[in-house]
Length: 88
Image 1 (tube, rainbow, N blue to C red):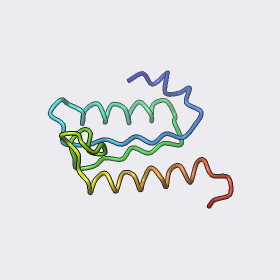
Image 2 (cartoon, rainbow, N blue to C red):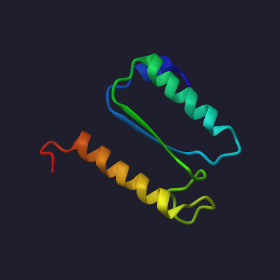
Image 3 (spheres, one colour):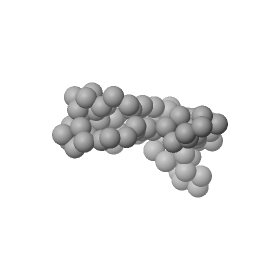
Image 4 (cartoon, helix red, strand yellow):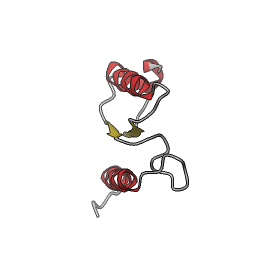
């Protein structure tokens, strides 16, 4: 993860990750979050769900309805906070 590229972000960032991954995603997620901090990113959220990759995608092998519901609630809240001008 390139902290210099992340430093150029001018908008809020929301990242959703499933923690049940056998391909080292937990380390990559940690590196990503450390790079955000190193870059001085001020407006970001990294959310982790006890679920497999693709947990939010119906029809995928890793789909998890409960985690997906929580994640979509977080996405809607994030978008409402950062995109809506009237607060509604």
